[in-house]
Amino acid sequence: MDSLITAAARALAAGDPLGALKRVALRDDAPALALRGIAMAQLGDLARAKDLLRRAARRFGPKETVARARCVVAEAEIALVSRDLSFPVKALGAAREALEAHGDRVNAAHARYLEIRRLLLIGRLDEAEWRLAKNDPSMLPPATRTVHELVAAGIAIRRLRTKAASAALVRAGQAASEARIPALAAEVEAASLHLTAPAARLTANGSERPLRLDEVEALLASRALVVDACRHAVRDGRTVVSLARRPVLFAIARALAEAWPGDASRDKLVARAFGGREADESHRARLRVEVGRLRSKLRPLARVTATPRGFALAPRRGREVVVLARPLEVDADHAAVLAFLADGESWSSSALALALGTSQRTVQRALDALAAAGKVQSFGRGRARRWMTPPVPGFTTALLLPAPLPGD
Image (cartoon, rainbow, N blue to C red):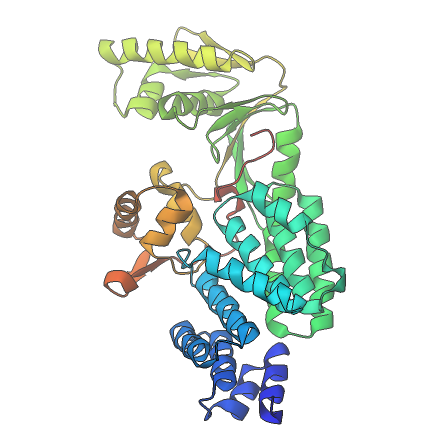
């Protein structure tokens, strides 16, 4: 490897893409193309970066296994950043195995973390956590250790383990300082905001206030009866009753919780559960049926009693009844789609369908509805069309992401 290629590689490792381009911008040999591709990726021109890396992979000879594998790993990272979840996972796995076989442990580790980050992104936390536990970051360079700790923090945040998340972010900050890469330090700082920004709203006794993640964690571990509008469940710290597939029952439970310690009128319950303005006899009959079903579901947690005006909720073990809601209300039918877009990155409808485990047509209908409401926007056409929304300033979206809360 000549001196210019070596200098460009060192510049990229230090987070200086412009310095790398100054050395190889006019060269078209395979190593230079690969370095130019990585530099363009760091500068944000992902389409150009992907093209350069593919050209470099084709120009490397069949015996240059390590170089070709590195190009595959770099292209996989670009796919992850651009939310192209259709990137062939098997190709990334084969590249990682090739790097491990040839002793390139740093790039092999980077490939493993890409695999784990993809799992984290699509909500497969158990598998991501299991794979992360198999990695020992102590012998890796500071930049890779930073990535390890950021992934650990991401898992802990989604599981509402705020102390573990905070400790991982402290370690990530220390590693980023050792790496002396400004972009990494900025990523750690951005991740740390999730611990201090409002993550949910608490409604209790007719008043509302925002909660941080650690406060949400403490609330879910308390004796309070929590009607969780983030996950459509009712819980009291020991028992969880999911109503995710019973939207009418959850709407009634939430209305009763918001009215506690008083009762909710039949007219209000009909409006919340069925969309009717007034409770006629047919609505009252249907409401009685649904309340009976809710009683059966909530029997371990609370009683639902009839009153002259409507119905009331009486917790069995909890000292109070509260509602845990998202920082900003969104249409429940489209909340999962909006959660993925809330990170500020651009997504294709096919990538969203893959992450959500649903059909692309279902995702497209949700995107069209959100676009009509002004909550998302698109750019590009055809297969190049991408959807995005800027994150809400000052809010974390951890409670919108596809991950279980404690007790799920």
